[in-house]
Length: 385
Image (cartoon, rainbow, N blue to C red; front, side, top):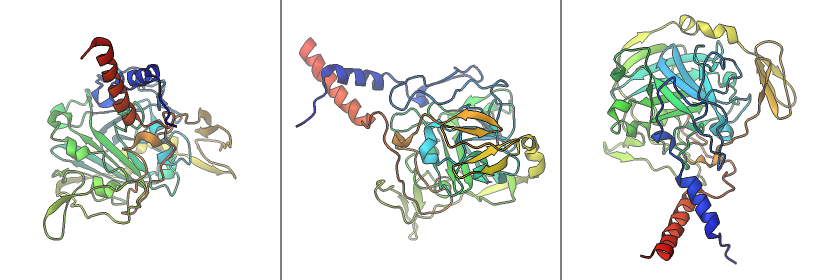
C-alpha cells in the first residue's frame, strides 16, 4: 500500500523547507551578528552553538561557531566540541578553535600545530596545518570530513557557521574590518587541516576553487599544498586548478566524478600543486605563544578521553569535560548533510560510512519537489489554470 501524505502535511513541510534562507544568502556585518544565525528547530536544527562571540564566551568550553582567518598567527578551524569525536558524527555541531584568544572561541592548545602554510592566491587564501588532532577533540585515527556553508539543506556544517577575514586584497590592509566569506571549505582529519576561503570580491569566478562536491577526498585533492611538519610560512601562490579538475598522463584535463557513498574510493587522480613564491618563514614559538595558557593534559578511563586544563575529568554519561568545566554533549549530528561527511585528509583512500539521516529520515530534496508539485496542483484546483 502506498502511503499518502495529506495536503496539509505537505504544505507544512514545503513551508518549513522553502521558507528557510540558505546560509550562503545570509549577510551579517562583523561584529554585529545575531546570537544564533539558525534558530529553526526543524530538520537538523536548531543551531548547536552561537555566532555572537566575545570576551564573555572566550573559554575552552566556548560553543562559538564564528571563525576568523586573518594571518598565519591568527586563524581558526572548526572542530568538535567534545573530546574523542568523529567529524562525521558531529559536523553540524562543530565549533571554532583559534590560534589566539580574542575572538570569543576556544584556543588551539600549545604543541598541537606542527606546521602551517598560508597560500595567498588571486582568487582565494588557503590555510593549511599539520596538527595533533586529538588536542582539538578529534579521534586520533579519524580520517575526518569536510565542513562548508552548504549541505543538502543549505544550512551549512557547522549549522549556522559563519566565516570572516581581513586578509583579502580587497580589504586594502585594514585589519579592523572583516569581510564575510561566502564560499569556503574546511577539511580536517588524519592530522591535517585545510581551510580555503574564496575572495568574495572576485565571486563567482572564485567559486570553483571552493567547490564542495568532493567531501570524500581530503586536503591533498581539494587543496594541494606542501603540508610539511616543522615549516611555518606565508607564500604567494598561483590559483590551483578548479577543485576536481586534473591533468592526465596524456596531458588532457578531466574532471573527477566522486562515486556514490556505497562505493569505496581506492584511489584518486593526482592533482597539481600550484606554484608558490616569495615565501616568508616564521618561528612557531613566537606565532602561537598565546596558546601556552591552555595547554591540555590527558586523562584516560575505560569510557572516554577528556582534555582538561587542570585536574583531569572524565565522564561516560551525556556530558564531557574540557578545561575542568562540564559542557553539554552535542545534540545535533550532521550525517544527512550530503556535501560534508567522511573524507580522508592526507591519503587517497576513503569510504563514507554515513550517519543516520535526520529530518525524520525524509530527504529534503524530494520533499521540495513533492511539495512544489502539490502546491502547483493545489493552485490549479483552487485558483484555476
